Amino acid sequence: MIRPAELIQRKRDGEELGADELRELVLGYSRGEVPDYQVAAFLMAVYFRGLSSAETFALTDAMVASGETIELGAALGRRCVDKHSTGGVGDKTSIAVGPIVAACGVPFGKMSGRGLGHTGGTLDKLEAIRGYRVELTTEEFLEQVREVGIAIIGQTANLVPADKLLYALRDVTATVDNVSLIAASIMSKKLAGGADAIVLDVKIGDGAFMKTLEDGRALAEAMTALGRRAGREVVCMLTDMDQPLGQAVGNALEIREALATIRGEGPPDFSELVLASAAHLLALSDLGIDEAEGRKRAERAVADGSARAAYEAWVRAQGGEPDESALPHAPVVREVKAPRSGFVSRLGAIRIGVAALHLGAGRQRKEDAIDHAVGIVCRRKRGDEVDAGDVIAEVHARDETSAEEAEAAVVATYELADERPREPKIVLDTFGA
Ligand code: URA
Figure 1 (cartoon, rainbow, N blue to C red):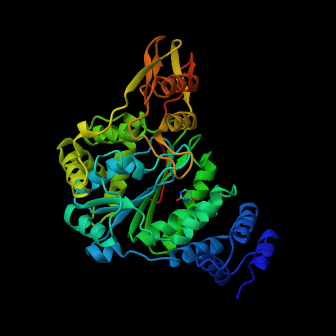
Figure 2 (cartoon, rainbow, N blue to C red; figure 1 turned 180 degrees about the vertical axis):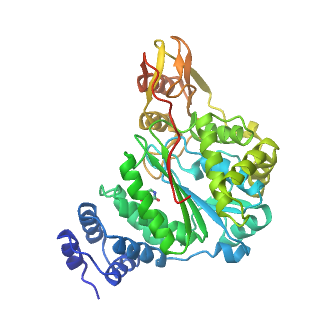
Figure 3 (spheres, rainbow, N blue to C red; figure 1 turned 120 degrees about the vertical axis):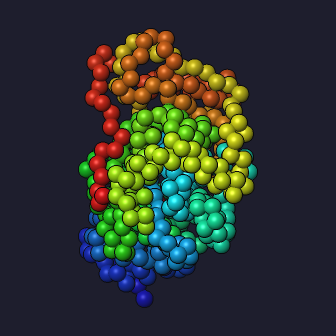
């Protein structure tokens, strides 16, 4: 039997712990035998001392072992692919990528999460679609992926229960932003979800956990190593989250933007990320094609309407109304105008995320209800030239008072300069392609 206090002390003093010790600590915690206060102290020791790669592997294995695992490939009789983003503002990538990949004949079965704080969650966005069921049983999930080619659901209750407990504890003990803990948290869920190949999207910048390319690379390396060690193929993209992704921030607004992108009418940065992600997923699938051919097929699925048809079949199968006109509209829509002429030099993702949160698009506490109709559309992005009085954004609000507050926050977030800034890039780097 381990003694948690001794493990805390050894980690505090910078010692490397054994795989069995970490396993007992994690499994003991998820069985309720080790109390929150000891695990909180342990997490803080890890935050300051870090974990070696052997310790990170052991932590991830223990987290996977805390619950059930899904054999997606075996259940479908095919090699399966999955994707994951570390989260940001306006990130609706899976909602556009899934139908494109499915339209190209590759099954897409994904478990997604909810948003907390300024970041949105895919499940909350999907719930803007009238009737959409995020909770399917594992059998229903597998059946839908087999029959329709795509399903996106909430994580089943027994998939990596240790992560649910650890994440909730990290969230309230200032121990979220540690590379090893983030890597183990994300990869334990991906490994338990059963995909053979995984495309990871590590967000970098103001609106992301990873603020610098250097930190993002460290996280990408840690997650890639965890995946490879478990026999999975991993490609990791590092992508920009200094400004919101695409234009729309807010649940129904983001579904509309994902739909526009599936039709080939999306904003350039978001469309590029969607096509790049789909190309990697197709290249990792059992189609036997490379990334360039994957890109061509993804573009074709958008151009010939098959991605749109896959979206409709998916949403209908999950009980939702795919028609865009059924999405909720906010009663107040206010245009935000440029106070002067110039080039947009900064559009901080976190401030736009927080303004959308205050409109009601996200939750400040877990139990808060979301208003799916509200949000912000950033019509102009970094690098765009504007004249004084041009519409740079729209605020979609439930009343005039919240619209006014959001308008002031949005105007203050747009920084305008006289010089054109460097051409913004969405994909900053890619590992493992
Ligand atoms: N997303 C996760 O799932 N876990 C983390 O620790 C951070 C982001």
